[in-house]
Image: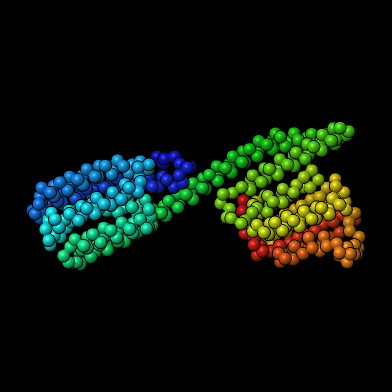
Length: 384
């Protein structure tokens, strides 16, 4: 059965499982060391001292198995002591067996300390422990045979490899935990969004319509209800845009434009997260705000306006439309000649800096700006 994820320690389950496996390995290599020393008992010049060293290995194995079982006890001092015991057991071999010995007293038992360092500290920890054990194995011998070289080589590559695998497993576990948190948060946001939409938003929309129909003070109440409905929709849209996987410097353009929605401004998007570089989003929002300011000034503060966001192919398009009387011919050119650079600077200038285009359609039907920016202008893409 899979243990529950500890959200406070991302990837902690990986370390716990690796140390649990290491506890089994300690017992296996200890049994091997005891059996081999009994088999080669005649190789000991000091058999009583050898028996004491083997007994110490048994005792340390029992203590280490207990100590590593709790993450709180896996301190630096425990790791240092574990490695020191392994080095000491290995260094005692020439004293117990005399010069010219072939196999060390602990044998493969030292691999437990090596792998503990690799699991706890990754590649660098495995490398440090392997260097200590390999150097000790070389220093206690009179010469280096081919078999001894092979053993040391395996020690030197074994520690870093196990450390790399442990670090990779932890990183994968952290990514899994993050994805699970994001999925859980998205599910909860969707549930709350449905609840709000089915309840509060519908009531506010009904109050707004009925207030407009009744007129008088009820109309003011309806207007306030409409503003609250728009604010609540912006809040839901902004919450849906929260994503722990979104890299730094990237924002959701749909959510950023949604913040401009009000009782008179309607914002429509593709229903997906449209990721763009933060400076691009800032400029586009500024351009749309300038267009809406023009609607409020030249059409009326209560004039309705519509903002439409599309992300198709290699471009991102934003349309801003109103139903005012339109712009009379030559009016923009006259404003620019008089030094009023609202359209040329705030709208066309910003879009030109992003490598895009700003096309204006105006007439008795109203005014519409078509703002197009290539995805190459820092755009990352869109996703559900």
